[in-house]
Length: 171
Image 1 (spheres, helix red, strand yellow):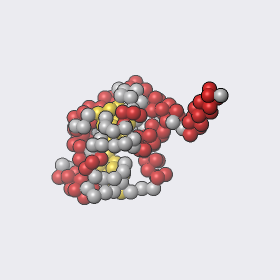
Image 2 (cartoon, helix red, strand yellow):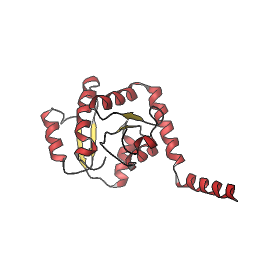
Image 3 (cartoon, one colour):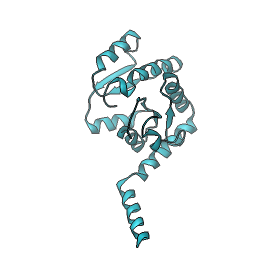
Image 4 (tube, rainbow, N blue to C red):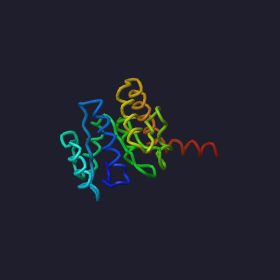
């Protein structure tokens, strides 16, 4: 979800997807967004024979993107660099487990195997983390539940409570 460009790890994602698909035949990848590398990525998918398993939606509105995210089994974000990506927070908010590379601010919001999965910047690591998550029902449930709880802790209501508690302690 987002800008379709190399820095977002989209080519690495396709490599990881190819590996995952070799071990789980019934799997689909949806890429939501548009960007400078979309046509190059689509060409790579055609060359690898992945056309029937990968859908490119182009840019969608925020509500439709969130609906698609909520319907997904896993959100994979293999970026080369990030701040704290909103899509990770939204994934947790809607109960979709996240597999993301441990770059930038991502490790500040994801604790590996607690409320998400952190991968190295390799197709092998991304694929391994996705497969661990989808093969282990207990891990999957834990990551989903803790991800939703993490999102609840970041809610504006909770932030307001924390501010109020801080002011009360300071008085």
